[in-house]
Length: 253
View 1 (cartoon, rainbow, N blue to C red):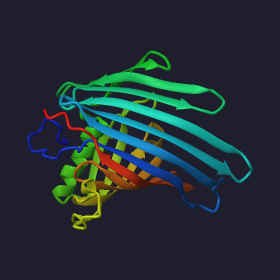
View 2 (view 1 turned 120 degrees about the vertical axis):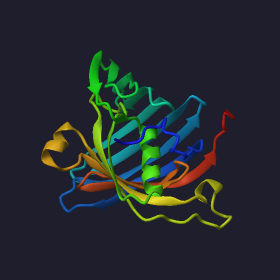
View 3 (view 1 turned 90 degrees about the horizontal axis):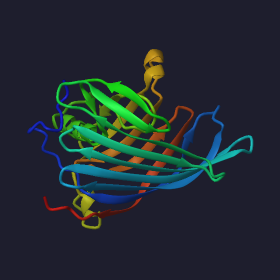
View 4 (view 1 turned 135 degrees about the vertical axis):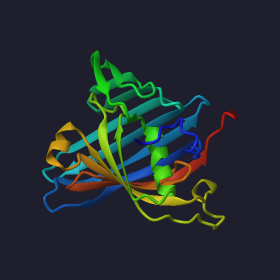
């Protein structure tokens, strides 16, 4: 069973930080309908002593080869208790037409017992979670622990509340250690050891086909900072490259 956050062996700390990424279209397959994409993403990862707060906002505009386009602004706010017991989430997707979709609720996971996700939007619904479920920050820390131990793969069941569904199967492929940069021109948050990571996400339908819903490539630093993001949907890839980064105030617990 995967180690949980309460395990004393899990020694990594998330550095509270604010990062801004520029989003663009990466490679496309010959049959892709997407011909262009642009946008920006803001990520804030905070520490409230008892838990982590994460706020992610992005706006992405995509153009299609038949002349259509899509433009969506997404806000994703979460709180995750450090003991792995509680997770709260709120997602809002807004379109220029004024249409808004919201998902919100909370999930609980006590020790070796099954977990439960309780959604309040878009409608009241409860979904059972497996005993070994992880929440997002706990999963990030588990990947870092596996990377430090020299492991090349890590499988986990992860619940993030982004959609009204249960935990997803997430497979992480971990590359070789990249030593910390020593150039003082590099921001201090990036002068840390890091690893190239490839995550494959399998929803309920994807598990049956054996093909992931999507994949995410990134460079993950030992303080939780991520750069060089590549979101792969199969026929096209959206890249999110770090533009700005700064430390956020630590609570001094």
